[in-house]
Length: 460
Image (cartoon, rainbow, N blue to C red):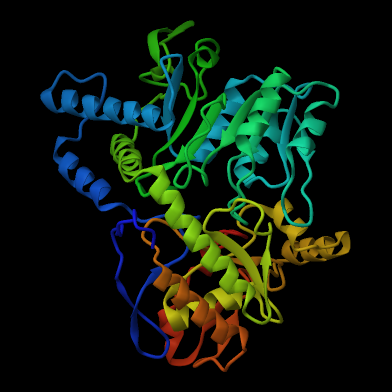
């Protein structure tokens, strides 16, 4: 580790979990790109705050005053974290997906409006825009990246876009686009930029020039159900809010509504006070640790992870080469082995948790996997018939604050055994509906039988 780095532990680190050989092993989470455990400071603050929980903004009681103060202090911490001033507001919501849907509604777009986005995006930054506007897509190369020039080419087409909606970091490959240069290019053309910062926020400073930012607590060590949308105050001062209800109004009559000022205008109903408090502590903790230390730590892990994967026979790392900046996350495939089986074996035999599937980024993954239109048509037919056993995908390992070089070595050693196709201690059965593999025999009770409630890519 770098000299500046001090070990960071998360709630749940070191938990012993059963494996199919009857041995308990310490659980290793390499799935932080999906969701992270809580920082101890976050959990401690939530425990401390719980007795003081009360409704905010409208209660005269002492607890309500304390809760309101804690809620607004969290908002201030989030604004500091994003380097935002008085002309902007932070709207507290559930997660990044809700934040982007919120923004798509509030910009009052029509089908005549063009939103430029990219094929690299998470579905959360694709589907909301396609619902309300006409999308123009920036394509990626075979390495899963695009250039500033590619962005400019899309922005310069007619008609002129209303918005550029772009990711700050890929949740699949970990690629970090040159976001500051991209924002500058859009602003030179008079186009506003909304950055999906869900993957970026725990790992890199926020782009200070983005017009709109969205990110989630559950990816940044505050898994208590809060997210945030940040943008210019003026964007939310007129028009109907995304949600209508109590707390968003000054006056209601049966034929008239006078909305209050933002951000309260955009936060109808009883907010997630505990989630907001948790997120406020998390961003303060990240600031306390400091970006230079975090980036150096994760760059070391990223290099170790990617170099190690490339040295394993039969493993193909998807996405950008070493010349591109990446987070400590990598998506890969193992020759001759379904992605779901690789993930199941890592979990059931080695107590290592990874993610597999399409990562809610189907257009991107089909491109970096090099799938043909005929391949995609066949898989679509299979899914529509209820058979997900052959759905394409990859495995993703993603590291974070509490990951060590020893953790990466442990993962690489386990994957090497799997990639050699060494015999597993148990047989695995693949589920038709989910496509997931489950250990059989005496290990059958080890796996949670949740297939009946799984959506098509919920596990992936």
